Structure formats: structure tokens, C-alpha cells
Amino acid sequence: MKLRTSQTQTTKQKLSSTLRGWLPILQSNIESLTETLEPFVQENPFIYVKPGSEREDQKFQKKSFFSQASKESVSSAIEALTVDKKSLFQVLFEQINPPLFPTEKSQNIAYEIIENINSEGYFDKEAIFEIAQKLHVEGSEVERVRSRFCYLEPSGVGAVDFKEAFLFQLEEQDLEDNCYLMVQKLIENFENIESYRKEEGFQKALLVLKKFKNPPAVEYLEEGKQTIPDIFVYESKDGIEVAINDAYYPEIIIDTEGLDDSQSYVAQKIKDAKDLIDALEMRKATLYKIGLMIVEYQYDFFFGKAIKPMKLKDLADDLGRNPSTISRAISGKYLSCSRGVMPLKKFFATALEEDVSNSAIKEYMLELVKYENSNKPLSDLKILEAVEKKFGIKMVRRTITKYRKQFNIASSSERKKLYLLN
Image (tube, rainbow, N blue to C red; front, side):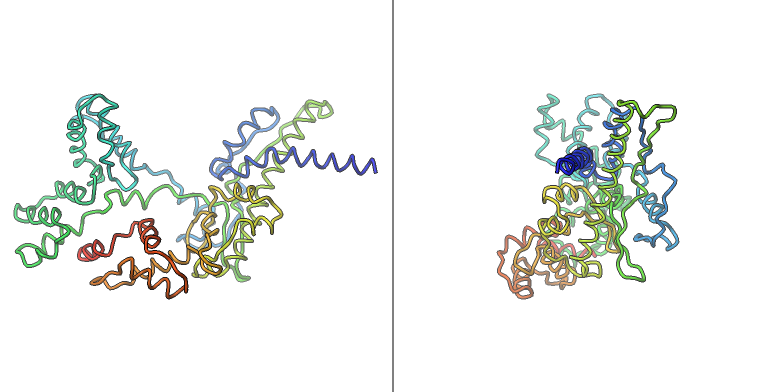
């Protein structure tokens, strides 16, 4: 009995030691794993870490989920997708120079303006007062500097709304006076654009307007740095398979050459190193099991269907883990499949009713808008009625409005006007 107790305590101590390293490693996303390991490396002189991107044993050769040729490995596909590109803000910062911004004062104002431009390229006009107060200048001076943004790339950036973004882009056009004035009129009266249809030069002005970008930084939204997924789900001749992105895992190397591992200090550091390796393997094993369970629960999703209700607790129970541990495991992690790269949290939809998820509602709503009559776009009330009829549930209109705004879908009246530009 005493021997069994001793063995149990030893096992618990080993597990506890591994878990101390496992939890922060589990919580870290794959791109910051090497950085997460750094404190452990600093405490242990007998190990060093080779970042995953530098490893040579990138053996995963399954069919790519991306648009590359089928012979290309997933690691190569990821590498192609994760090439660093300049962000919108880097591009803007590089343009804050003379002669457009000739003084240090104007440059400082411009930098503050950039800090208040969102990912779509629009400026938060509420920030004018804050900038003026911070830099001890007048609000009118901030506005004067912002007006120069109409000469920056991408064209339209720094505008407060789509109308101003269009006017900024109009300044870049080489147009005859009559055409310029007509385009300007259409922009300023965009809500009543149909009333100008019979005016001379309308069609020509409309063609110019159709070339304008909305939002102004749309290409940066599309070309942002791609996310490296932790889990791959792909089709094979045997059905659906799951794989962990081993290629981007750092490798922990133990270097004890010439050392006496019988010394207690050395022996302890070697044990710590092995615990760290075990922790990294536990991370892989946990995420692999999560991938398998997602495929089991959401099998139809990978063939084009909507996400089904899935509770974090259900997954935790199946894996024999605490829900908080699983929550850490999925936070900041991504899965790649034929439908794209998506956060693991997406698969844990909040149930509206027993058999309906909010994700299914949103997908159906997007489908309704996608195929609506452009001459008579669906109002939120009409969308609500269609959703309630399809899913047999009761909802309130403000929920549909909230979902619509989450996807940046304009109101029915605004969509009707936008359809004219297509």
C-alpha cells in the first residue's frame, strides 16, 4: 500500500510539472508558441528552441485546402499565404512627408488622424476634439490636415463616410467639368440618385461612380496577413481526416554534450526540458482531439451545411477536461478546411432553440439578402418573417437588425440605391 501511494504521488508530481508548462503553451496561438517558450528556455541552459518556420521536417503532404495546385504541400501553401504585406497603417505612415505635410506639427496631427482610422479606411470624426486637445491645436487645424488625406493612397482614406470617400476619390479623376459636376451632384445627393436618371450625362457619371471603392481600404481588408491554422480538416478517399499543423511547431532541443547527468542540478534541468517537450505534445494531442470532435459534431458543416448547436461543456465532457481548459485550448486557434480558415470558437454556436443555432440563422439571412430582388430589397421585418417561418421560432426584429449590422449589410433602402451602382 505504501509503495502504491508513493507511485501515485510521483505520477501526480510529474503531471503537475508538465501541466505548469502545458497551460500557457495550450493557451498560446501557433504563431507565438516560440515566444511563449522563451521564459522556459531562459531558465534552462541545456535547451534551445528551433522555430517551426525554420524546421526542415515539414512532412505534411496532404492535398491543400487553398487554391494552389494539388501537389503543393500545406506548409508551402501556408508560407505562400503568410507573406508579410504592408498594412494600411504602414502605408499611410510612409506618406506623411513634405511637401504635403511640411511641418512637424502637421505631421504629428496626421499621425494622430491615422491612429483614428479604422480597418476600412474611415476616420472617426468624434476623435477631432480629442486630437485637438491632445496636441493643443484647434479642431479646424486638425480638419485642414485631414483634408490633405484626399491626396493619399488608398484613395478615399481618411474620409468620415462613404460620401466623403467618393468625393476624395473624385479629386483623383481627370474628368471634363460637366462630368465632374454631375458625379459630384450624384455623390452629394446619393439618397435621391434615381431622380437624376433623366439628366444629361447621368450614365457617364454613373460609370465613373461605379469605379470608386467602398470602403476605401477594401484591398487591405482582402489582402491582410493570413492566419496560420492549428488544425487542418480535409477530404480523402477514406472520408474526412484531421491533421495538426506540425510544420509550424517549434522544436525543443536538449543539449547535454559533455555534461554529467548524474549531478542533481543537471538531472533536474533535463527533466524540466523533457516536461516541456511533453507539454508541447500534450498541446498537439488536445487540439487533435478537439479537431476530431468538431468533425464528429459538425460533420455536415464540412459539406456546405450550417453549423449545429455545440456546447463547450459537451466537448469538455467528451475529452475529460474542464470547460475552462477547453476554452483556453480554442481561444485564438484556427481551423482550415475547404470552406476557409475560421476560428475554433465559430463552431460553438449559441443555441437559440433546441435544434437551431444563431449561426444557422445568420447563414440563412445572408442567403436571403444574396438572392433578394434588387428592385425590392428585403426589410428587416421581411427577413424576420422568413426566418421565423423556416426555423419555426419566435424572434424580435432588433435581433435581425443586429445580425445585419454585424455583417455590414446596409438597410433595405440603402441597398436599393447601392444596387443601382452594380
